[in-house]
Image 1 (cartoon, rainbow, N blue to C red):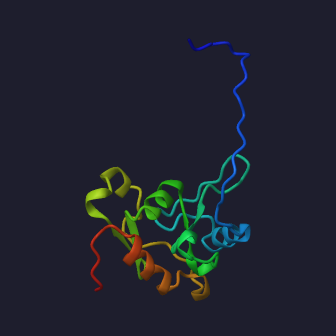
Image 2: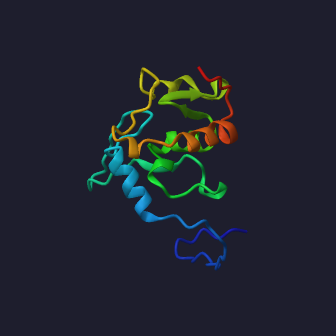
Length: 147
């Protein structure tokens, strides 16, 4: 029988594990380069305290030897970050690529209408072709043909 007492404490269990080290400055540099806007939607959302809701996504994942370098980063909203990490959306020379069967219409409506990412003007802040190629070849689940 399960007790439903509001005063009953839940047991605490110590956990030991490993995580890839991620440099905090990476997030700040990516957010700044993208002016706190999601590259895929163009949205700039700040919470009540003025903190940006956009996340710094690695193009080539850290777990697959991707560096915490600005050119290996994209500023993405939480939903876009999740989809990018799972290979449902990718990027080729600024053009958004979609795994057609896996991206629902509701999500497509969130994307920029021209299906081009909002990228930094400065060349040294734009995604490096090497990392984008890695993502298209090793992560992206859709069809890709270079045009």
